[in-house]
Length: 127
Image 1 (tube, helix red, strand yellow):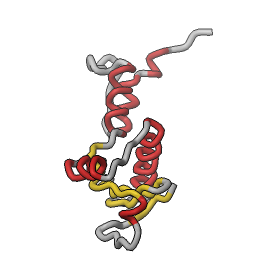
Image 2 (cartoon, one colour):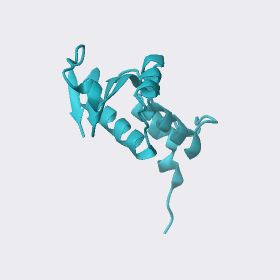
Image 3 (cartoon, one colour):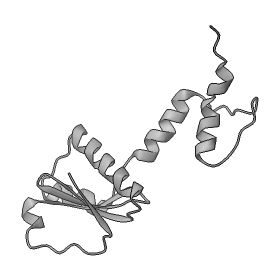
């Protein structure tokens, strides 16, 4: 059995996802699987604003790799629903995330969430 690898051009898939087309033989140097994987992973990365980093430090909030995975997943779910500014609640912590810029704006622990009013959000994800 022979498989035609030309049908599996990663660059074509990435360009199609971006709404562009690539003709066979016009693949760029960035068409390697690793390059595409790196771009996709970077697109899912969350950035913490200076304010959010300060709040994490002041409130002694630590995030494990699993916490970050859950936070990214929640941000992705919020984006799929069209949310622009989301409140994401994980256990006894809350984060305000600007979804279009993938930026965590602020972070709170359980004590800071009590009697707090959340404004300028248009959706919430509760894990």
